Image 1 (tube, rainbow, N blue to C red):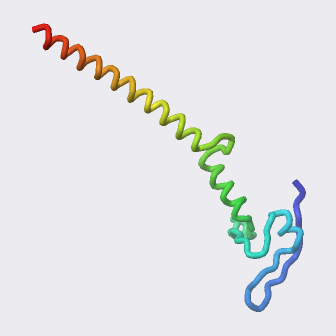
Image 2 (tube, one colour; image 1 turned 60 degrees about the vertical axis):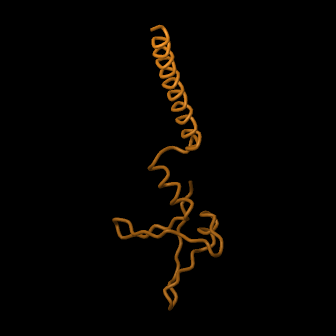
Image 3 (cartoon, one colour; image 1 turned 180 degrees about the vertical axis):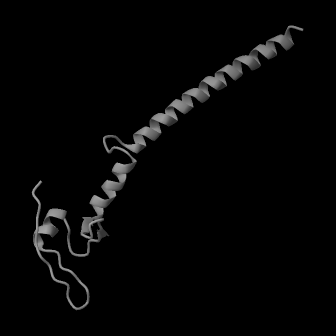
Length: 103
């Protein structure tokens, strides 16, 4: 990935205009929000909101699969376990009823 470098000047209201090359590379359009943070060396980091969000998601896990798929898989497992429990309970109730009838 190529790195851009450039200069910008603050206006009298504290606004900074990002050069077109940076806006294009970050996929920024008028009205988009950016995240600005100070790095440990005093430099400023500017990220598009999408890039910042992907970084946070990366901390939580991989994007190689859907969280909804994971939830659906977990729910299917739970439903199967609940069904097995219900079947065992039904067998126990049936056995108890048979024992009562045989008396």
